Image 1 (cartoon, rainbow, N blue to C red):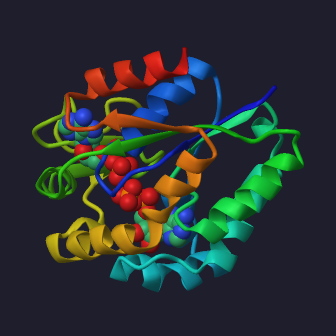
Image 2 (spheres, helix red, strand yellow; image 1 turned 90 degrees about the vertical axis):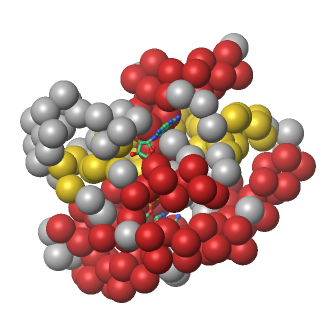
Amino acid sequence: MPTYIVLLGPPGAGKGTQAKVLAEKLGLPHISSGDIFRENIKNNTELGKKAQVYIHDGELVPDDLTIEMIRDRFSRPDCVNGAILDGFPRTPAQADALCKMLKGFGGKVNMVPFISAPDNVLIERLAGRWTCRAAGHVFHGIFNPPQTPGKCDIDGSELYQRDDDKAETVTHRIQVYLTQTTPLIDYYKNRGVLVEINGFAPIEQVSMQLLSALK
Ligand code: ADP
Ligand code: ADP
């Protein structure tokens, strides 16, 4: 049976950081909707051009574009055994679409770790986040510094600060999360797959909570 894990939580909770850990442990692909959008923006594709303005403003990209993009990602053969989804779904319509897509593989959402942390912690994390150009690996100036400032430990590529990580956009993204994404907490609770994870702990301790929830 394939294993599909959806990481839920506000911006800055640690979804990307933990998705990489889980993907490695379980040998599954890490699918980050934000990374795919940023790749499309970098390559100036039609999707990138459409998504750019929403991302810049800290708004959600419309459901139809986002769902189509994920459907396209799922058409690649590496997803048949499962995947770690990070940043998708973010609305109930996306969650319904995901459920239908996975049925096509004979799969379903098996587990939804809901990672939370207080707003002031999220803001501090995003203000200090450094992201790698090549593969979206993330570091933090204080909490998870790279060995060489400005360089990714994993692939040596340049680290940059995301344009939507500036303070005013972050505050708006947290609001957008509260209004549009938090209904997914009950959505997955009602389906018996939600697991609450305390994201306000050091990275290794959050990983330990996740790995023990998997057992
Ligand atoms: P998300 O994908 O949920 O937006 P990230 O994984 O990108 O979150 O993490 C946001 C920032 O916080 C990054 O700079 C990351 O290095 C840092 N970070 C992630 N988890 C923790 C943690 N448990 N403690 C401190 N900093 C963290
Ligand atoms: P973070 O984990 O810090 O919230 P992401 O990298 O997941 O950021 O997403 C960055 C931006 O990309 C979001 O603010 C939003 O504009 C867009 N985005 C990513 N995933 C989705 C999604 N599932 N639905 C709509 N927009 C999305």
